[in-house]
Image (cartoon, rainbow, N blue to C red):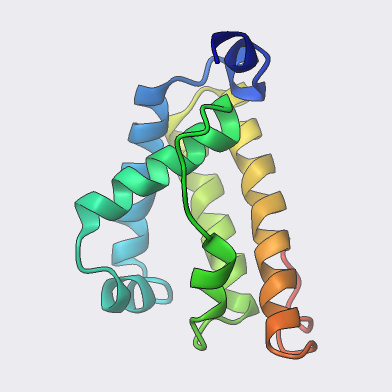
Length: 141
C-alpha cells in the first residue's frame, strides 16, 4: 500500500488527508449554501457527517490511491432526476473556487483536473442512463 501511495498523483503535489478533509468540508459548506446546488444536496442528505466522511474517502482514493472509498457514485447520481448540465457547471465552478482557496496551487490544480474528469464521466453516464441528449446541450467546462 505504501509504495502505491508514493506513486499516487496527490503525493507528488503534497496532498494529505488533512488537506482533503479541509477541502471537502469547505466545499460542501459552500454547496449547502448555494442557491442552485443547496436544495438538491440538502433534500437528499440526512447525515452530513457520514456523507463528508465518505467524500473524504473518495478524494483520498482518487488523489492518494488509498483505496478507502467503497461506493457507486454513478448509480447514486443517475438516480437524481433533477440534475441537469447547469448543476455540473456550477458544481465545478464552486469546486475550483474552493480548491484554489484551500489548497496550494499544485494540489488545487490536481483536484480541479480530477473533478473535471469525474464530472465529465458522471455527466456522460447519466446522459446514457437517461437515453442520451438530455444533458448533452450543456457542456462541462
